[in-house]
Image (cartoon, rainbow, N blue to C red; front, side, top):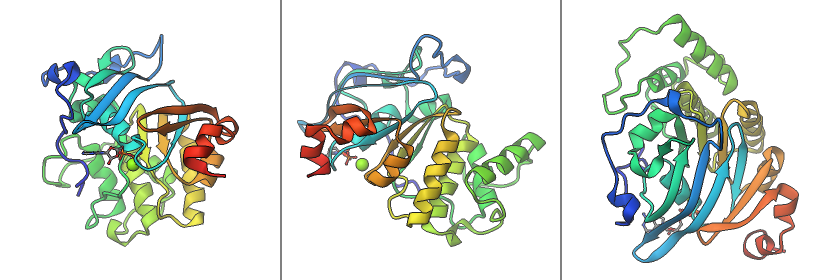
Length: 279
Ligand SMILES: Nc1ncnc2c1ncn2[C@@H]1O[C@H](COP(=O)(O)OP(=O)(O)O)[C@@H](O)[C@H]1O
Ligand SMILES: [Mg+2]
């Protein structure tokens, strides 16, 4: 599993990449947002063989915010998530989680531990385990260890699993094998696995791709339920879905922000219509 979730790509040799440190002490109680946003990106650049996938990208996400990201294929949406999660090092620019944590100096596991959870485009659940076991496994922080189920859950952990099962609408399906779930249910289970880690910031990359209309609707409900409890960034192409959850919307194009604002403002933006929505 997690074929997309491979080792960090050191995209550049700029100052941020060169200064990467592997010995930081990460303490999630220190994610200080008392005077500012949960996520702060400033002038981020990422090049692949001279091609600028991210080009002076600036973005700020407030604590508890639900942000939708749209934009054409190749706009840099996934690469932006790679930068935030430490999978790709930017060539230049600043990336902060709260005010203290410089994301360009942390590795993927440290960033995950600090409270940034990411769902990739393809569901990556343990198919041969039950829904309950998947959530149980998600409690474990050391993903490199071969999954074993011989550890005892505390009452609090059981309550947490029960609560997540309700949120992801899989209550009553906890003993089904994850491999037997529908595509949509697998996506929800993976969101549930993220929730087990109680992330501050959740990044969802095309969560409703391949879902039925009913599943898409339920996913919108799920995301709205999470709003306020977590900060959430959702990348999606499905504009009907975006329309049902949209607060502030950002349209990326050619690695930077093309337009940002209300759904209505972004949808009616001439540049956005030109490059993405069409006439
Ligand atoms: N690892 C990589 N190596 C080379 N090019 C890449 C890599 N990752 C992304 N790109 C390129 O960067 C651009 C942005 O890609 P991506 O972030 O996946 O866009 P989006 O998610 O908005 O569709 C694309 O042109 C893509 O081909
Ligand atoms: Mg993408």
